[in-house]
Structure formats: structure tokens, C-alpha cells
Length: 447
Image 1 (cartoon, rainbow, N blue to C red):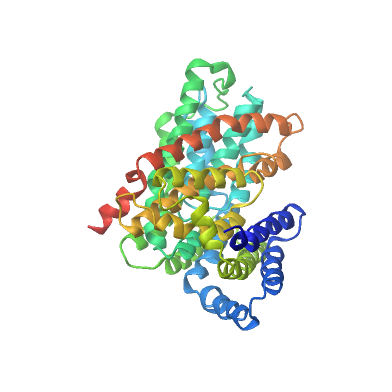
Image 2 (cartoon, rainbow, N blue to C red; image 1 turned 90 degrees about the horizontal axis):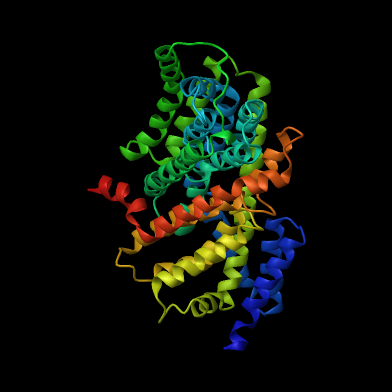
């Protein structure tokens, strides 16, 4: 047994060492796979099959075209000014209330998550718009920064999410079903954030005092402005997700609709010019190339890892044959949570999912196998959202620190996200304990 596990264990050690050494993940994955194939005597003819796997599974995969389209849609929306107008309208609605600006930021986080899904853009955008105003109104810097960082990461879970597209491809399940399954947990998480703000506003109002009212705008006028500002993102969300739910379009086709709609909104907002378009195209290309390149490296690694007996090693490690399925499930989630302290979601998804997915699929939860994988994917997405907030490499924390005023230190941001990480763990525990939080909507739509 120890002899059979020698090469797979050594591969995992080499992978972690290469990543922590700071080398690009795509190079590490492919390099480790090729080096160990040579060292373990894997026939080169077998290794050459990775080329056909990359071509058929990645480069000609129709589903993956949705990635650049959704990225482009998010970047164009971020540049259209919709979020800024929505924040002003919501702040006007909540004026004079303790925590009013915080509630506005939480709601904007949910709306922008369903419209863009670009984490860096969302965190930076809301940080630049909301954080200075919140600090000027004597908000606690910790709760302000934590709220902005956490709300800005909702796009990784709430559809249309790039992560769900990648998970759907890796698990071979319907991306449309994943989109629908993510709605319940996404709204649950947004509701937990708002509930936490409500408790702080009630019991510690000094941390989020009522904002000074600069203009006495009638309430119904503020509601009308909000409805008008909500119209564009709601139409876009419905056109993207509604066409998938109704069976009119595939996720790839709906992504194209969303990209065109985002360009139209930028044009109407008078933000569409050559500089904006070229910048969005450049950033889209960089993001897409990074994801695809890592997927190609992960293909080489996973093929060699399986050839050397990695599947059997993982199955034995989780005691799949005689262990409690929920214990195995929680062990996998704990592993992913720890990895989230050090790795990005792309790396975890493309390295860990192919290894543990067969283990999860073989477990008996009393659910059909495809539903088990959908439930697993959504639980994993909730779990991976914490990777943006957990130090030392929580990317949302560094996005926010880069644009935060001088008085907001990285230590304040770290302490500020702790309650929101706890809420994410609570949401994850709820999804694990009650799978129907994720499965109810796709099951209802399938009837």
C-alpha cells in the first residue's frame, strides 16, 4: 500500500512546494505532471493523450466560451456607472437610519453579484464609492471594510458566476442547474449579512450612526429614482438567467446576450468609447487566458496523478467504503477551507475537484448522483467564497487595501472580515445540513 502511494503523495508534495515557491500555477501543474510521468516510467504515448484531452475538453469546449463573455459583461457594467447610481438611490432610501449606508452596500453587493460576478472590480468599485462616505459618517472602519469586502465577493456564488461554469465543466453537470441551485444559498448569505447589520444597528448603533442627510428628497421621489436605476440591471439579469431557466438559450448563448446588453447599457450611460472598450477587451483576454492556461496544466497533472494511482489514494484517505458519507463530505470541505487560506479558487477548483469528485459521487446521501454533484458544487462555491476573505492571501482584502484611505490599515480589514467569514461558515453548514436550500429551485423547475 505504501509503495502504491509513493508517487501520488510525492506529486502532491511537489505541487504544494511549487505553488508556495511562487511559480505560476499553470507551469507548476503541467511541469509536475510531466516530470513525474518521466520519473515513474509512464509511457510517453499515454502522456500524449493529454493533448487530445486539452483540445476536446478545453479548446473546443462550447461551454467555456461563456467565461470571456460573462467577464466582458461584468467589466462593461462596472464601467457603465450603474452601481454608483444605485448606491446613491439606496442611500437616499435608508437615510437617517442607523446602518443605513451599510444596508445599501449589502443590497448593492447582491445586485452587482447577479449582474457582474467580477470580484476584483466589485470590491474596488464599492470600496471607492462607499468606504470614504461611510468613514466620513463615523462608521466603524472594521465593519465598513468587512462589509465591502464580503459583499463584493458574492459574485463568485450568485449567478452568473464564472466559478459555477468551471465547476459545471469539471463535474459534468448542467451549468443552468448550478445557476438555479446557487440562487438559494446566495440569497441566504446576503440575508445573513443584512441580519448581522441589523443586529449591530440595534445593539451597537454607535458603530453605524445615521448618516447626515445632505438633501431632503421626498421618500416617494427616492423610491421612484431607485426603481428607475434598478430597471437596467434587472432587465439584464432577467435576460441572462431568464433565458436559461426558460430553456430558450444555453449558458453560452445567454452570456452573449448579457455581453451585448452590457455594451448597450454602457452606450446609454454615455460611457462607451474606444478607451473603455479596449480596456474591457484587454482585461477579458487576460482573465480568460489565465483560467484556460491553468485548466490545461491541471489536465496534465490529473491525468498523470490518476495513472499513478492517485484516485485509490484519495478514496482510501477518506475511508469511502466504510465511513459516514457526511463525515467524508465535511472532511473535504474542511480541506478546501484550509487550502483557501493559501490558494485561489481557480487553483483549488481545477486541482482538488477532479480528485475528490469521484469520491463524492460514490457516497450515498439518499439523493440521485447528479443532485449529489450539484449540491457538492454549490457547497464548494460557498466554501471557496471564504478564500477571498481569509488571510494571509485573501485577495478581496488586498483589493480593498489598495484603494482604502490611509487610516484604514490591513489589520482593521482583517478584523473586519471575521464576522462575515463566520457567517459564510454558517451558510455552508446550512447548505450541508439541508441540501434542499440548493436543490429546491432546480428540482421545482424540472417538474
